[in-house]
Length: 213
Image (cartoon, rainbow, N blue to C red; front, side):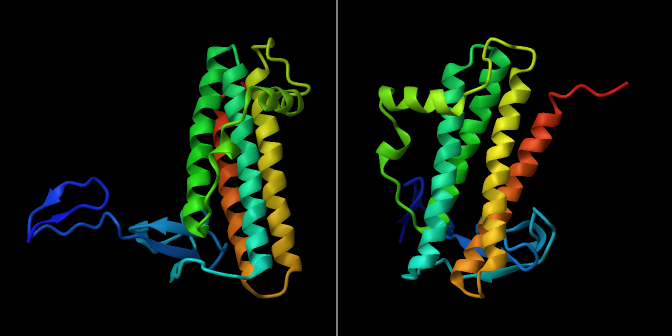
C-alpha cells in the first residue's frame, strides 16, 4: 500500500523507503559536542575529530539543566538580533552581505537548539517592534562607525567574536565548576557548540584581512 512522505508529502510507492522523519543524535566523547541528523561522516566529531556515541534526546524535568538551555537560547537570540539589525543598518554592500550571511547562520543555530532541546520560541522573541529595534541598535552598535567603510567589517567581526567567545567561556567555566550530572553535560555541549561558532567567525574574518608582504 502506498504511503505519504512526512516531509514533502509526496506519495510513495510500496517499495520506497522514506527516512524523512528519522533523526539521530550523537555526542563527542572528547569535547562533548552534540550533533543531530541522519548520519555523521566517519562517526567523528567535525569540531575536534573525537569519536561520537549515539545518545538519546534530552527529556528532563531537572530545573538546573533547563536553566542551562535557557541561557544558551538567550545568548543565541542576542546574536540573532545583533546580525539582523546589523544587516538592516549597514549601508556598505560588503558589510550588508556579511551580516546577511551571519544572520542566516544564526537562524540555523537557533533551529538546532530548538530541535536538540525541544525549545519552542514565541515569534515575538525574534520579530521585534520598531521601538525595541531602535533601543537595541543604540546599545549593540555603540562605538561602531557605519560610515567608515574601510574598517567597518573588522569592527563588526570583532564585536561578534567578543560576544561568541564570552558565551563559550561562560559555559566552559560552568562545566568545570559543576558536579557530574545533566547540567554539567549540557554546559559542555553548549561550550563546544560556541567554540564551533568562534572558529567559523575567525575563518571568515581572515578572508577580509590582507596578507602581509
